[in-house]
Image 1 (cartoon, rainbow, N blue to C red):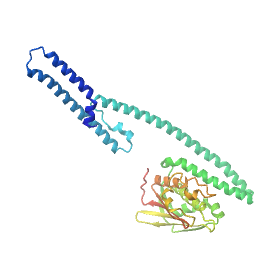
Image 2: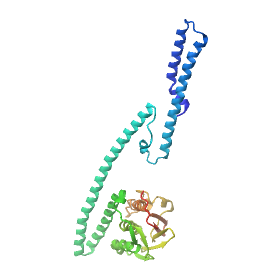
Image 3: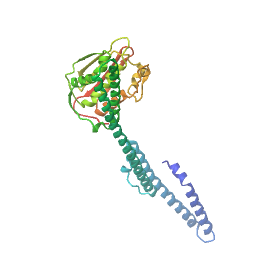
Length: 339
């Protein structure tokens, strides 16, 4: 709040004061007061008036400037009402009261939508668990009636299962901290479980798997990392070269501050200008628009989101036409950065 703006705001009140002083001077003309008295009265009135304005200006300026400074420092600006003190002037008190009422209304509204979201999330999770039952039954029927047709149906059901699992983890990704268990896990066990889970797709596509140097322990949640690894493997299968067999190499390296899990493939790769966007939600890129790929742009976004929640990092390097390398970086120690 500048002094110029403050004075402009008080211009009407100042004009009224000047009119009042002029009126007093007119009424004093018939009376035998000396010139000193006639000058002293308007001067003292104006002095006290402008002194009062200055005190009011600096009081309000200090309050509003402090308010702006607090807002600049706050990441969650809606907490401003919990920090600011009740000011000494009436407008500030009214403003604080209004902010508190607005904040209360906002919190109630957010909680209402949060409850709706939680209710919808519970429904999605319940629906996912329910739909898994007929899929499992279908797979049992296929197992007992193996032929070329049922084999093709089984492959499609596996894809459905993968999409259902992706939906389940997406629904839970907003509250990973409620659904994870950090402990020492051998990377070899996580990798073997992921390969076993995707064995039908790997066998069908005749994928060559080369795993080595995985006798390393990391502190993480095996279920969530297993899902991330599964998404990476499925992406490798989806974006394999048509003219050659897919090769996937999985290994780890120990560093001073971390352990890095590498997943490399010799697939079609990604354009250089698109690499920075692959973890963006809904980004499909050139590869996702290829005939038969049908990308949703959710898989890698979800992997990035889950890694952030678990305190790990995920990075991607790729050369178009040569393949893609994914790095999952596990920090050493037990520190988990919940964002």
